[in-house]
Image 1: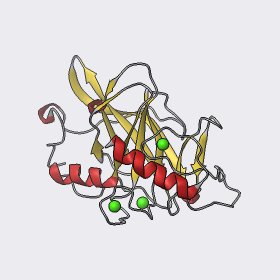
Image 2: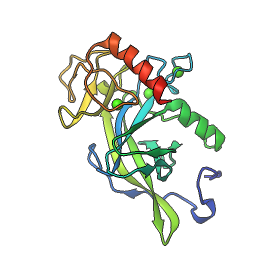
Image 3: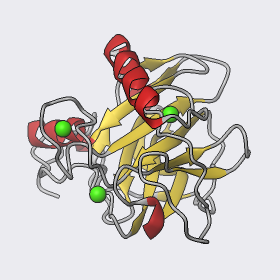
Image 4: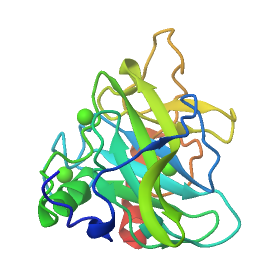
Length: 220
Ligand SMILES: [Ca+2]
Ligand SMILES: [Ca+2]
Ligand SMILES: [Ca+2]
């Protein structure tokens, strides 16, 4: 690990000691959680004019707690490797979500000299870890896994997202843009992806794409 510029206190940490508080492909129930993700984009989700397998992946983060949280305490990575793919940023108020695109991860990686792989969300299924700074006596010592979400192959097909559903109370597949008719779990919900807004079910594909396009613009 030759370049630690992305680390806030590089001199104090020579390696990441990941405290594995692994949760079960289910919520770790920290206040900050991975709320929804899209691993196989077929749409220009980040709005840069190009559909890109890396830049248009996205991960949505939710503040499920009762106080505002500084996202600079948090990092994201996929299931492989020790190094995070993105250092989060910004203040997230209770009940709010924030969307991070793969292109944002690439930009951060390039800026910090740690490659340019984006989130690297595998289209055959993968795990997304949410990491949090772990301090000892006020010194940042490691990053610990506070939530680990696993998605399956059929969740990572063109423009299908998956995430927590308030309707079902569990992990659900949002497949309105590319309906899933198989029998694997989670099954198709007929609901559209909801990047940048809370997960609720909008089945009308055309309307939802327009609607979220407007919402995304207003959230940025
Ligand atoms: Ca992918
Ligand atoms: Ca794009
Ligand atoms: Ca959402």
